[in-house]
Image (cartoon, rainbow, N blue to C red; front, side, top):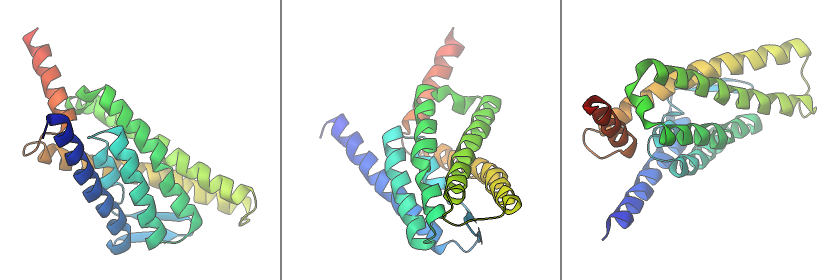
Length: 196
């Protein structure tokens, strides 16, 4: 089997495992906070965020799986639609990581990226909830809607940043046992910079 086929097969197996985790975590994770359309499930973003360290395509594949997991675990339209926004936020984040793999070697820049990703991620989820309620599907008083949006926004940023760091630590650990391209490319770039 040539290298390209091996890589594709490995990506498919990894994607299936991460997608499986993305489906199972919202269903079985005991630490779950649900307040209307706001839900915070411990480590729920880790599978899709771990996929970001492999490829944008794998990330989108896993994001679809995690959306299915939320649909099965918490069949609330806004929560499922919020999970679907990961296709965009995590897909773009994975694209940035693929273009700038050396971010994983720069702690401050990496955490700035993490913060920006968290803001973008939470903003998309807030947008979904705002649209859902603004078009009158489930009317809320303006103050209640603002409180809900702030909860989803700030809570989403914090959860996103924590889960992204967990995914990074997991992938960094795994990169010592298996080849994860982004870490290999970052190491090669670091070696090249040190040689200059």
